Image (tube, rainbow, N blue to C red):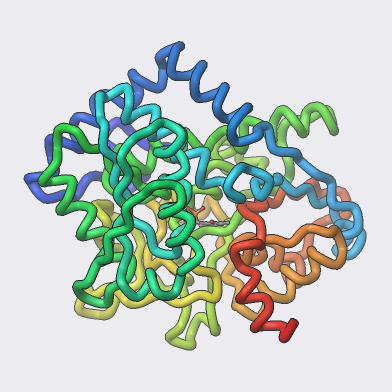
Length: 393
Ligand SMILES: *Cc1c(COP(=O)(O)O)cnc(C)c1O
């Protein structure tokens, strides 16, 4: 069984490119070129050098001793929180900005919900001196003021999306409209393993540096490349795709994907896509998404902005449907508790997204000798306000 993408852009029955006719030339140009460009020696050299010197890779694989003692297993944290800009997202935006340059593009567009992908995109546009336009729902602009300020400081233009619910999906529609109108000079940087083929595969490849490093670091520490389990939170699924990538076809490595259950799976306020989702099309891709009986996308909810997405990338839909991945949903309450626990036990303040992955140890038991790698996707600085309000700090 192959859990990676096939030539047509499918993971099992999921994926593909369900796009308006007018977007076809843009997506087709990318599809025809992305593997060729990524294989070029000059591309790899520049990508690797920026990952090292700008992002600060390799990120450490840290044995969390006190956390391991508490849960009676061996927990290693992959420290993506130490990446420049505070999370894994920059691995992908670096890769895509280099791709855009190789394809002769001079103008970058992106959409963002919580603002994290907008910041990662604005960062690399500043780095390369390219024009950057970020579409963002009007409601999200109000909710995420610090990230809007960051994007502006980095030189990006933030354009409000004023239609519909004025949130992420409306920003996505605006970005797609812009791309249709500017096919020649513009590249659209998508921030997760979502969107039409080849985006999910391209983003997974850029993020796969995470599991490449885990393999090398485990080999060095333990004399083996494989952990028993690798755990990651899933919003769209890019940090998880990167952490799972080199283990997809190794059945001896357990894959655990953690979704946000919000106020509870049955509360009507959640983002637990695998538990609640049905097959549908979102953002140009056939995948699992939360929708009403007549196919309207349900507004998702999670205390962590980065997991607040109604779908999941096609790779993860297939990992769920095939049973290759174990899917666990974690509530706001469980995640917040696990986040604070990591602070107290290890001196690391995690992003609330990453806290969802950490929360599984309360109920999911492992053997004493199991090596469990948790991808710590980001740091908690951006979430300080939420932590303050939640814990009355
Ligand atoms: C954006 C984000 C996520 C969720 O995105 P994925 O594509 O699922 O990885 C998770 N953690 C952090 C810290 C994020 O910023």
